[in-house]
Image (cartoon, rainbow, N blue to C red; front, side):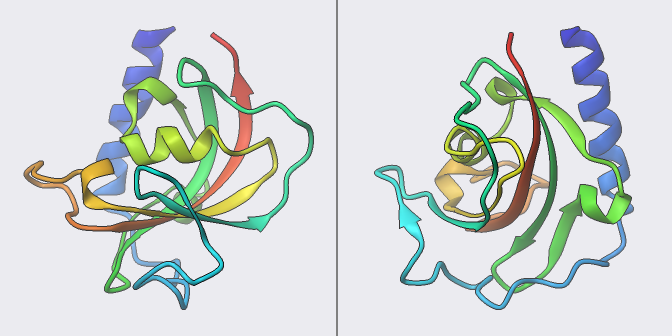
Amino acid sequence: MRALLMTLMLAAALSAQTTPNLVPPPPDVSAPPADAQKTASGLATKVLRPGSGNDHPSKDDIVRVDYTGWTTDGKMFDSSVARNKPIILPLDKVILGWSEGLQLMVVGEKRRLWIPGKLAYEGKVGKPQGMLVFDVELVQITKE
């Protein structure tokens, strides 16, 4: 199952390189608003749409999500929404900001994440740098 997930992740990453800029940035893309919740790590989040249930994914779970990511200047760099295809990911194989943020969510919830560079791709060549902003909808949790 892990091999299949890694293949899906690679295919999504390759298709992300050709994703057109179809999803406009949110008005607060440059910085989290005052009402955003902040964690000790520096992650800021805001619930855009509540979900249902009480079950949160753990760091060892696999999630299905729909998302769009922007840099703080409003440039979209990836979007499963633009591809019209949610992605399946193991939470222990994503950037720290996603792992932490998604563990706060329940199925059906949509949340905006302002992820500081140290919890994202800081120092990784070819990846967006600095704070990144994601709108993420948690579609499904699969317990490992």
